[in-house]
Amino acid sequence: MSRLSSLTLKTWWWLLPLLGATLLLAMSTGAYPLSLQRVAQIIITWISQADISDTDSSVLFSIRMPRVLFGALAGAVLALGGVCMQALFRNPLADPGLMGLSSGSALAAALVTLLASSFPVLSHPLTLPLAAFVGGLAVTGVVYTISNRDGRLRVDSMLLMGIAMNALCGALLGLIMVMADDTQLRSITFWSFGSLGRATLPSTGLLTLSMMLPVWGIWKIRKAMNILLMGETDAMNLGVKVETLKLILVTSSCWMVALVVAQAGLIGFVGLVIPHISRLLFGSSHHQLVPSSLLLGAIFLPLVDTFCRTINAPAELPIGMMTALIGSPFFIFLLIRQRENT
Image 1 (cartoon, helix red, strand yellow):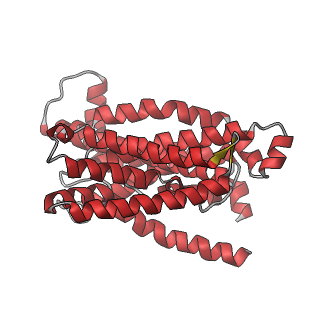
Image 2 (cartoon, one colour):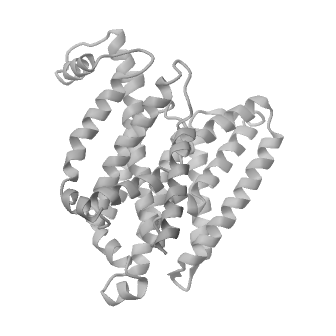
Image 3 (cartoon, helix red, strand yellow):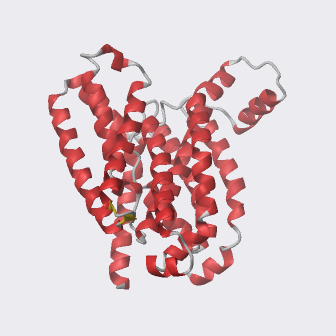
């Protein structure tokens, strides 16, 4: 494996053309077939600002392209969130869900769904994603605040608090599901499984703008992330502002992941699986791990989504369920491998 890493350490740039090919493939595949040539022709025509108003272009720009682009951005964000959490906890089995973000988002979304029948104002299409976003950040804020003692973030306390908040939100979510009627229960369940079907060009643009600053911040601290893996004491002795670094890792990861969860629902295991694949291919240095995880996540999620919407077309499999089916065996493999190495 070390030989493989040494051969591929500086070659993650080849993921860029692979990403482009993946996006074109995903845009051309679906219940309404579009050839790769036709997709390229429509895009070139659009770039040249010529008139395009046929059915193919409508399907591409109104349905297929927003979904594929949002999926690529979401996969990149979820993967990078996993890199941040694994650096923070110094544990390759960590992911953003440990902070209670996903459970907080699910609880807020379920609560809005339950109350929408009594309060019509909550039926607005933007209410549910906004509530999920706020709910996820609120739970994460509680975990962070309680774990921050005398200006120092205790990672062990944060892990325990995350477990406790996940359990509490899960219990409250179960209570809401018991109180919900059949229609509300289906809505809550569908959202919890995750889907990219609600993606639009405005939501894709919003995610792009909102993730730029966190991604830039993580890129700037990648050297400090490498040093943090040596331990907090050694990192401080080498001049790293450890508490500031922790704050950047937590806020950047949770902000980006909350944006994705608010729009697409719960999509698990991407933040666990992708960083591990990146380590196997490009090594453990965050100079390679950060960009390669971004690109692999952007490749992985559109491919999974393409499978979900074509394997049983016109019916669509929930993407969160599929990532769990892929990620759970991988997680078990990692646990077994870690046990054998200790």
